[in-house]
Image (cartoon, one colour):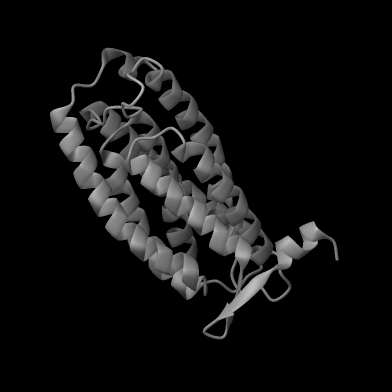
Length: 230
């Protein structure tokens, strides 16, 4: 067995459940990225991408295992879109950051406008309607209940909305994550991804604190005109 194969298969048993180190490390990188986002640091994006790649390998492998009970297309697919959206967020924050003082945060948070909010909420609803059907068709060979695909679609689309809102510097992104976690934590626990489910409970506290921090910053700082144009 070569080193890469060993790293891929390495796991630890906790409470009688085998957990891959890829899942543990992927979530660790994700948590570090969330802290970077709270602090409005550009490094949050590349760190998050590393976590996304690791978690994609976890969820896609679980979906196609011989004893897989339920597909995790939404969980795996959203990691791909996380990477795509994160590249955009990384670029945008770098562009804004270049115009600021060396020790200043990358962006100044603000609330989405009425038109922007209507746009992302509409995209969220439409995306869920389409994705739940797509996931149910692709996963027709698994004995998953119909509600499972609605939940998976909610998490999938909501995660994209939240990441895009973070890239735009909207306070709304923290609220979007809360909406995602309210469904995501029970679904992950149901699917026996206990470390990820527990981490998302911890995320919940971080998200609430992050929302407070960004809200205060949006009231205290004046967004620069250039930020809205990038």
